[in-house]
Image 1 (cartoon, rainbow, N blue to C red):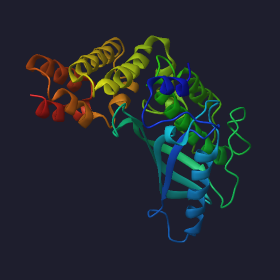
Image 2: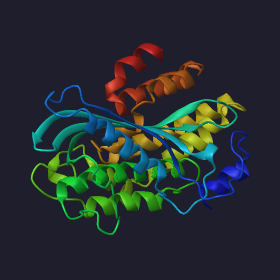
Image 3: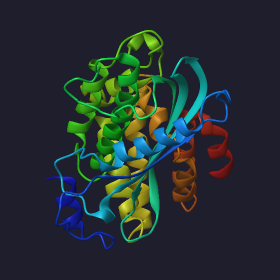
Image 4: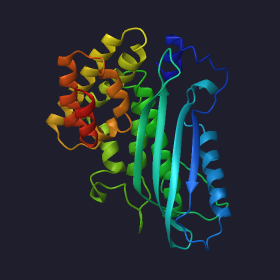
Length: 308
């Protein structure tokens, strides 16, 4: 059952059946360039921003039907930090996406991640193209621009589909892994190889596709469909489901410490999780705080302070 069918069955009030094959993403791409030398024509960055918005929003990424109201809200913040060679930019890319919660106007974060290993070549008006059968293209640094963006688009789709159906995002996680395996390779390009660091595109895809960590996908589905979507009708049951999520993640973490996907799961969710467990009884709140401090080390102090 695809995402569109699931949403129709659930009768989401904010959605209605689509009649045409609409695009999947409601993305906003922003290019920041204040750190780049003033000798570079600023018009180039405005052209780049417009081209990337068109690339992500107008391309058809799936075979599913998406009505305009179903499009996934997401943003890509491309922060250009330096010019390495002529028309070659070093940048960071912050990717965010959210998913509507049933019976509310609230958007729950799906992804909030910053990629610090992004180098690409861009010449004004160059074609912004991506072919999943020829990811590396003909010029590695130019191809890296669309390869990285296509990778995160598929990651967003995988997470979104996972949140509506058990293992619903498998095909998109596989597409992301295919991009990793066929990624551009060359001087200055990093983030695609296991030896490029412990927190990169390679390891994120490896974690999502490794059969040893399939419980991660169960955690995503339980968090959103069994948890957040039930908040309006039964808060107590939602908290029980959220405890199940923490226990699942703890099982994975205990079996294989230091996986990238565990802190990745929690990025952007700490305030939401705290609000959920604030109304718990003492025993549940203490257990949640204990697990959260172990799983989400970045926000450990916040959980300790707020959940007591």
